[in-house]
Length: 619
Image 1 (cartoon, rainbow, N blue to C red):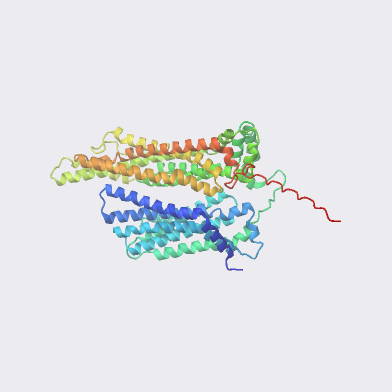
Image 2: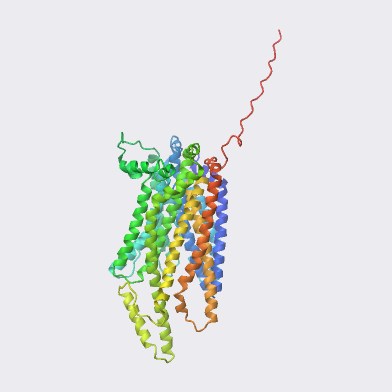
């Protein structure tokens, strides 16, 4: 037998897949478009070549790091658990194959697409070195840190897949481990430094692949090689654990529960007996599809936990004596929770239809009096019943946090503008604005000592109360509308992907990529370029206008432009997905897991061969 036969077979299969080629091409095109957008924005703002190269390098590097850390979610978190559900993993262990044969073959097969995409991204990243601001050592260290982040993400997904059987649970566990790995260390070091009132010292941050990228750009001595070694040890540990446990976790455990008592795993998944009976009486006769979709309880429980944590954190920050600047940090934390919510919505929207196609449930449903429209509308009602209230709580906390964040940003911008104006006026010989300087210094000190409310007086640089609160309310409403529209678009498009895609992880990746990631880049670059060009031309045309004063209105105009474009995008996705679901549901359901329809017309039965004549024997 050859060495590592599974590796050879999986690499041959991966090399023949069209997705391996097209993902590499898509990564190169994405890198070119991102670089072109950054260059156009920098060109319109009059940035120097060295600064332009540095900004472009960091934008591309962190975008590539985010994609590398996401590889484990969609490529490896379900590769072994899918084999367990289909019952094919056990056949491999009937031979003399070992755990490392299977795990290494799967890891290399799934890493080919991610590694090829990364290789297509690196030449575009190298162009920034010729622009200035980036050294060769910094480029090669950053490239090595990107490969390191890709390996760590794939290894974590492989370990979670080795101990899991459900695709959605594997996806959620991989996401949790990757978030702790990437953000847990820096947050722990920052918290320790805040408690001890000293500068942050990297200790737990050395375990983060993102921190390896940060130290790659540091001048002088840095813990780059130490952090790289620690993250590599973590990745190889995950790989070794996956090799050790996969021969013992592929069997389906026999339930010990008998009779009517099914134990706590069944109660955790479907709820107690009283809850099941009540749900059956409420929905089974009127909305049978909604009952099928919302039978499982654990997804809504997890969403309620996340919503209560967000609301509790908001109330804790609101009641604490922290400075107003903390709401800007809360805005970034809330953005992270929203990204997790988007991923969860896309996964949940496509999961039921994929499982129903694989088990043949859709064919059984189509044989009943239930119509295609009732199936689709029942699926949507089930999702709304499960996640409607926790999502509403999350949106409420997000809107309230956005209001305080915009207010904090407005105070910082107005104080900086008033302070700059007062200093420049006093340097020219005028003495009438000394009271303005005194007022703004008092406002700055009050905001830094822990008060969560703005000063009641109105400075000459901030305008009236209406001018202060109109941008805040509009920006918060824009954030709520954008989030709600994105969730609706992810839900409808995810249902279509669940009907047309073979695996849950691939359907989730397509939904997130087409609905959220690609349009986000287009909208962000388009609105930023438009705002930069308009504001730059406006300031150059009006020399009497204070730029820092108009900076207060930047969130208002930017929010209106971005929200309008995002809502147009969401409406287009919702309309297209609904039309496709209602018009071709039966046709797509007949295709099954493959792409060829399973119909007698497409695969006619062979005609019977003619019976040969009987030749009589000679007497």
